[in-house]
Image (cartoon, rainbow, N blue to C red):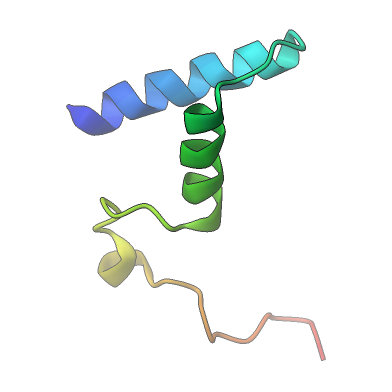
Length: 60
């Protein structure tokens, strides 16, 4: 349930940004942590792979 609440918050924040409205400092920090993958509740790293250290296909 917490994931759905977080997604709803993220959707609202994106809508705020689209309307050129500022986010609070704490909202920006949470958003940046999510975007950078630094969130503590990300349990699907093992299932999906973190992507770190894996080569990019088509990039030499």
